[in-house]
Amino acid sequence: MMWEWHPDLAVLFLAVVLDLVLGELPTRIHPTGWMGYSVVLGEKLAPHGRRGRLAVGAVLAIAIPGFWAGIAYISLHFLQASLGDIAYILAGAALLKTTFAVRMLHRVAAKVRNLLVYG
View 1 (spheres, rainbow, N blue to C red):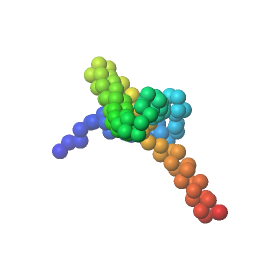
View 2: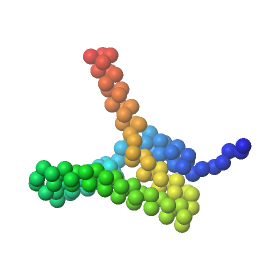
View 3: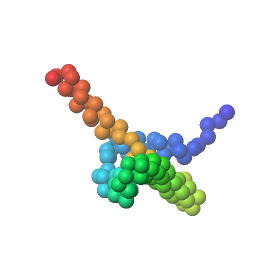
């Protein structure tokens, strides 16, 4: 069986490299920050009663991640179909990079380790 090229492997590799080199984006341009702003807006529009807030919370918990995932999926699909694998890989890596924080987690873990070892 021969090895077959798959652009998703390049997306993953490049996303990890971007994270290690660049670290975290500022909140104002970070997709996770945008999701947070969406939640805050939804909370402001929610009714004040307990049941209403619970219902709105349940809808937000499903709708907001679904909306943003749908936007990402459609955008990446369009990029790959119209501009090719390179555009898909670059945009996909930029988006995927925002879903983890290897560099920041390493830095925080090192601080905790130093506190434990050196007091």
